Every structure is written in structure tokens, then in C-alpha cells.
Image (tube, rainbow, N blue to C red; front, side, top):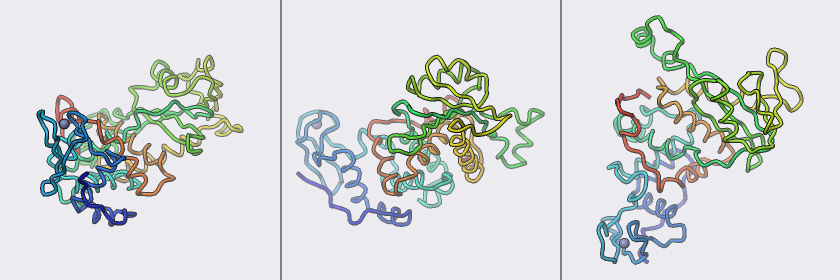
Length: 326
Ligand SMILES: [Zn+2]
């Protein structure tokens, strides 16, 4: 079988990653390894492994007789319809999953030599890839908590805020709920966070039921919205008006995550439009859940679901495309 050349030592740091993935052949080998771990390249159209590699053009050609016989490594991946080369996509993902406080499209643009608009688009597409959409349900001891993220106004430039907020200051906070499983699959806590329309019972209770195994111990604050969970769970309440910890009953893990999240949003992003908040939440949850790994392992894990996820510019911006400034 024809194979692209083999890369040398995998990178460990951002500087190494940018240098490493600057080579198109290295990117190709890396992606091919993720996509066909057994080393057998298969045609994305017919599934046949009767393919030849055309090294000068870095594409494969299927020997079967059908449409689209020639295919690049991008065909069938989230990068398929993008003219942006893998030499930009791969370091961008590295930055996204490894920069602790998140990374803005200005920074990605500068680092990779693309426009801010392009970087914004890349950033959002990569966030879709790392969305933690297929989590197994949480079990054991689970903390549930809610918070508000100061909306776009709070972290907006003062002049912009004055123009946008006319007598309704503070109205644009977004409600966010979070679940933290204290001992996740790798023995460490993991979180799942979600932008919710409000913190009423009919919003929060179904989220708990959707993401937590029946029989688990659920710890929450005294918010009335969590009443009624005790039919399915061992539900214990910590009343923050009285105390923050009662033995194992507390939500300190979730509180810790909220402070990391708020620091990240304040420190990095110029503004987070509520429409995009869920992607920022997923990104931060991803880094938290993978905090025990190395930069390389986080990156590789993030790249695994690349095949099969699609998101177009239209899908990102909704019906009224407005360019976010993050
Ligand atoms: Zn084929």
C-alpha cells in the first residue's frame, strides 16, 4: 500500500506543534493515522481499500469505477468544504484545547497568519468537534449547580456597552447549569455544562434526569427547582444561607469550575454572544475533563471525532449572520 512519509518525534509544546504541523506530509500522516488506525486507507465513497496514493498531489484514487474516485484526507471530515489547509487547522486545534484560558480568534489569526474572520470560523468549527455530546450518564456522587455568566455587556468595551445598553443594564446575563461527577471514568471529576433559558424546575430537572443515572447521589443548593429529584435520586441539599459543606454534601467542585470558567471568559474573550455561549462552555468543560492529560494527548483526543462532524458557516451564525468579535 502506498503511504505518505512518516513524521518524526510528535510535538509536546505549542511552538513544537506549530513547527511540526507546518509540513503538509506530517499533517497528512497524522490525519491518516487517526482515520485509518489499521493503516488501510479506504475510499470514502465506496469503502474499497483498492486505492493508490498520488504523492505529488497528496490524494488517493479509488480503483473502482464511480464518481469522486479521487479523494483527499479532508473528504468526509469536518474540514472537507474548507480551503484552509491542515497546516492551519491542526495547530489551531492544538491551541484551542491546550491554552488554559481559551484562545481568541485574534490570537489564532496572529499565530497562524490568517484573518480574524477566518480564525473565528476555524475556532467555532473546532469547538463543535470537541463538544462533549456523547457522554455516558453520570453516576455515583453528582453535584448540580447553576450560575449566571455576565452577558456580553459586562465584558464589552465601555463605549460599546453605552451604545448597546439603554436602561436595561444587567438584563443580558445567561443562565448556565452544571453537573459534576466526583469520580468519573478515569477516577477524577468531570463536568458537563449547559446554557439554559432559565433556572426553573421544568428546565433544570429534566437536565439532571437526562444526564444522571437513576440511583445516583445528587447534591444541590437549596434552589426550589431541584425539589422532586428524590423520586429517582438520593437528593441531598446544602443550604448556602447556613453553610457550604455538610460532610459529603456540597457543591464545591462545581463552584470551582464556575470560577475557572468566569476567569477564562473575562481574561480571554472580548465578548461572548449568548448564541455562542454553549460552545465556550463545551470548550472549557473539555479542558477541565482532560486536565490530567498532556498537551499531545488532549490534542489527539480532540482530533478523534473530526471524521463525521460537519458544521457550515451558515449553521454557525444562524439566519442573521453577525460576526462575533471573539
Ligand atoms: Zn471507491
